[in-house]
Image (tube, rainbow, N blue to C red; front, side, top):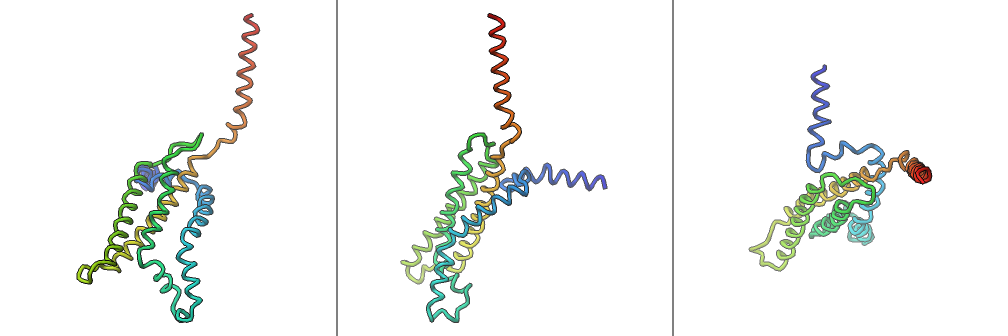
Length: 203
């Protein structure tokens, strides 16, 4: 039993925290996630509005009355729109990870986030360029549209995960020590008073 507990402590205390991107989750509490999920869901809702709002309007046409909602959603995202969504959704990560607010700890895994962000953005832009080029190319040079759609789904999903991790990691770095914040002015006043008292006694 002691060996099992040691292995568990090693996995949770040493191995997992050292994993790029995911490791900093070991320092995030349930409160960090609870606050971050609210911000994340609002952001995701507005960012994906072009898909589900478009599907909602299309459903109002009679020719789509018998078409399942997933099929309508597919029509709103099968022409490279998810690539554009991914690049736009990744942008704020750069600002959140690069700029540490006052009194905040350094963003964890900053280099790993930048590398993954750059890779995803480059893949999304490249695949979208291929999709646009294929529309003007002759049929003999056509590309696999189904592959591109699946690629856009994967890149979009990874972008969403990376954005959420960025939010929760940043939330975990801006905690304020309430006790220290309350006692700091008192300590500063005491030090200033003691310094003035010494100066007065010396004179």
